[in-house]
Image (cartoon, rainbow, N blue to C red; front, side, top):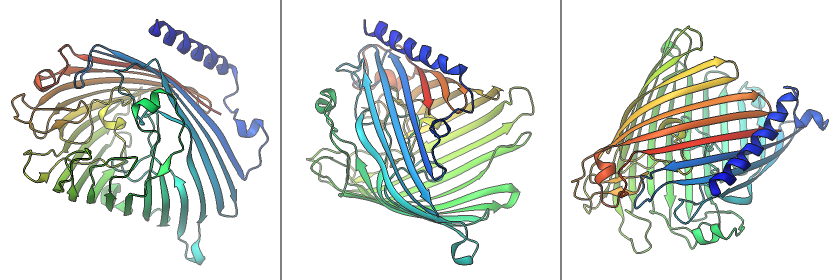
Length: 462
């Protein structure tokens, strides 16, 4: 019954969306409403149906499905370098049941995502430097987006309250620094989410996230580089339990952007040093020495052929906790980073995260038409440390007897910008070929069959 309802609802969305294909590709709400140039206003709405067969998480039974909705309304006023902006978000799901992994990564009902003031200049005090400063509640992308990002696929979005400032010299370099408080999406307990309770999100005054970032745009061989240092200091609060991380995270990134008939690459390494706790449990008061690291490498080539194929070899290693109960924590922390662009869909899937993972893979990107793109991705996944947790599934064998091979993930995604400024249709599929650890770890699902994930979505931009 629920599946039939989902198909009817999704069919209605596609019917309404297809009607828009008769509209002009140049149509937008700003022009249609004859809004002034100093005012930016747009609305985004996304509807996505997701389904999983044969779950992989701890104690999972059978399959699952949700119908997820997200609406964003954005408004910004610009005048002589000054700006005031705001954005509202409403994220919700339906068709879920008691076994669906629903939390604040999927639900954030009727809330304020951004509310900021800012100022920018393209010639600061006659120096030729560009400057920008923004204060208030805001969403932020930094560098590779592996530690600090505005979420795109996920149904809710990370947001922060604080200050973000930058200074740059045209195409040569850019310096940025930030000091923010992470915003808690509320309510954050399952019972309140299921009851549809609406509660205003709050800045977490028990946590501070700060850092500085330098990007260099002109290095030898047409490459670019980044060097940065982030620091997270968090404590438990009345509304949110944490692992009390106090972690410095320096990192380096060197890369070359893709060009036709040329090789491109990306190398990034991140180290994390400080203190943390093993769990969020309120009774866990033991501070552990924290040392973890991430290594990412990618090598690509763009062919001068029809459909513009690009082939990419990838490798990621994110450290895990080698020995339980040794007074140390070695599992890499992704902070507020995004993972969909490397590890597959999130939503009710989210099989892999940037922690305790050892993963080679490849990706093939295609662009058959200007408005149509697709990719095929394959990655193999091992645990970096076999006695630590498979983060995406919350499975752990503290004795290490279940091996370290999680399995292979295959993924396909197709995106069609039906009307580039108005309507985008997208669908995707992921398949997890379960390995020894996924089948045999304590708490693994009784059904050892492989897992599948499918989604189809529409996105309207007005």
